[in-house]
Image 1 (cartoon, rainbow, N blue to C red):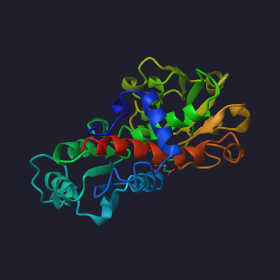
Image 2: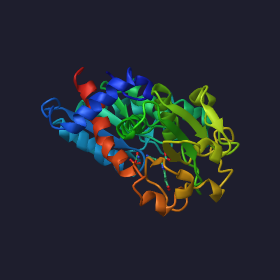
Image 3: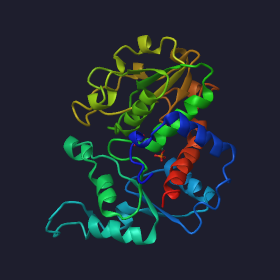
Image 4: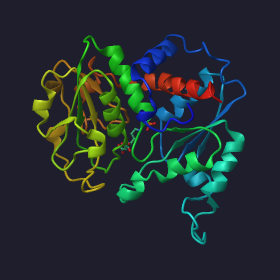
Length: 312
Ligand SMILES: NCCC[C@H](NC(=O)CCC(=O)O)C(=O)O
Ligand SMILES: NC(=O)OP(=O)(O)O
């Protein structure tokens, strides 16, 4: 595999899940695979899980990870083509990506959307510019429209925790005070569409995800109806897609409660705001899979890095 920038880069999700679970059972088996290879992690935004689990994955493969917070610490990077650089940006992505490629054998990038310019966000300018101008493989650590390491992690976690051949999985919107990206919900949707699960989405009116993502997945505006017979409830806030980046609804009735969850397992990518997205009683119960999801981030990243290293 050259790059990992989308759930669409997974050729066979069941095989990948099996391989990731084998890595989880024996994480140091390929400790020599990444010997003398460097992974550069570039963050344009905050992170706790992605930053640590991706470094840990690299270390488990014998790679050397080097990390940089690009925003603030590096020179401002210009992405525009042909720009007269007399503003705040000091170097062009053409040089920046080429330079980082001299130091790193693989580059991982986190770059969130603006949530103000839909066309620009959907063009994935930052991620795609790294793919274009770096001479080494690129891994997305959450871009404007997707979080494929998270989506794959969530698929592993569902496979590990299901007792049924075809469980029912619900992606539920929940309220938040800030405008949040669609990336996690998009990649989770794409991952579930590849799995043998009954998958539905529930969100208030005005909050449907991009139809290019949801395709023929059933969308309920009634959360209670969607939750009937659910085995897994995956919760995430996202801002409006149609009224791009706007917060149209903060109705607390959409918060996940123990009563609503019933016998289903609760999932969230984290970080999660307690008693806004989900009540304490859920996160503090056996029904919550959030810590195991975070654990699985390491093995998802380790599989992706293994596949890239094998083709370097
Ligand atoms: N990487 C996982 C989620 C990252 C981001 N969450 C956030 O920005 C939450 C921030 C807050 O709660 O203030 C998102 O939704 O895409
Ligand atoms: N789930 C996730 O990507 O967490 P961080 O934003 O902390 O990396």
